Amino acid sequence: RTPQRRAPGEFNRRARFRYVVPVMSGKGGVGKSLTTGLFAVGLRRAGMKVGILDADITGPSIPRLFGLRTPLGLEPDPATPAGQQPKPLMVPATSRSAIEIVSSNLLTDQEDTAMIWRGPILSGVIRQFYEQALWSDLDYLLIDLPPGTSDAPLTVLQSLAVDGIVLVTMPQRLATMIVRKAANLVHQLKKPIVGVVENMSYFVAPDTGKRYDVFGPSYADQVADLAGAPLFARMPIDPNLVALADAGRIEEIDDPIVDVLAQQLQRAMAA
Ligand code: ADP
Image (cartoon, rainbow, N blue to C red; front, side):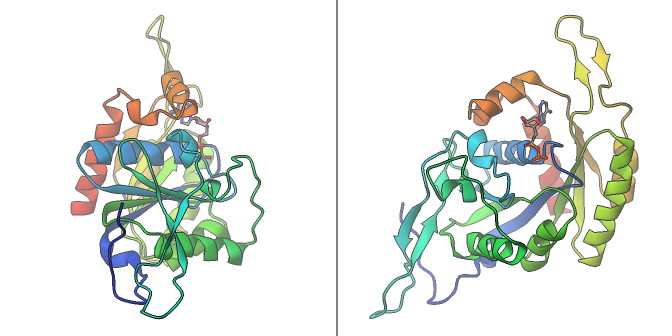
């Protein structure tokens, strides 16, 4: 892999990412990371060049979905002016289907090393992942944001050039309140929400085919209304998905949901 040349000092990667799309959730545990992974797999199958910046630094789960554990490599800065000592820059990990991934979990070889970083350091690290990692030219850079609407995700949204945000929710009445808050914040930041995904919407028993609304009725339409964005999909609770995710083989998923997600996002970004 040969990193591309660029002008000295030019590390703002913005020009090389066609679309920068953070994935946000009102709270933790709604499946934001898994959904980010599914978007990436679907976009890749559609022939897009895709990267994931894992900005969920306190719970970085993207590498695990793709079975990646090897620490990121470093390469001398290819844009170092002659006569100067080159800075070492991070080389994104590459998944089996060539999705590029940068994550704090790939900075050490101990997957369970806890990262306790305060806000400013955290946003500095994410900025560095964004601007200085040796990404290829990408059609989509997806950003797995820290969960919730605290300072951490907001700093990320503020500091990066963002084209559109995807919001992931679960069917809970609380979701509408959280989404209202998220939508307000995003509105203040003047970044558009381009779509909503309701995850763990229901469960279909494999033996009987009976459908259960495990977390109660869907609020997906209200949430989409509040966000002012289309509902991309409602995803069921799927034990197969968990098995693939836990085995690091999310790219082997055999489910049209990944194509639906990719098509919806592509349509929204083209609009
Ligand atoms: P978040 O990033 O919002 O904190 P994760 O993506 O890490 O959430 O998901 C939390 C847990 O729920 C993970 O163990 C994940 O495998 C599981 N999960 C997420 N979505 C689904 C789903 N649709 N069906 C079954 N399990 C899911």
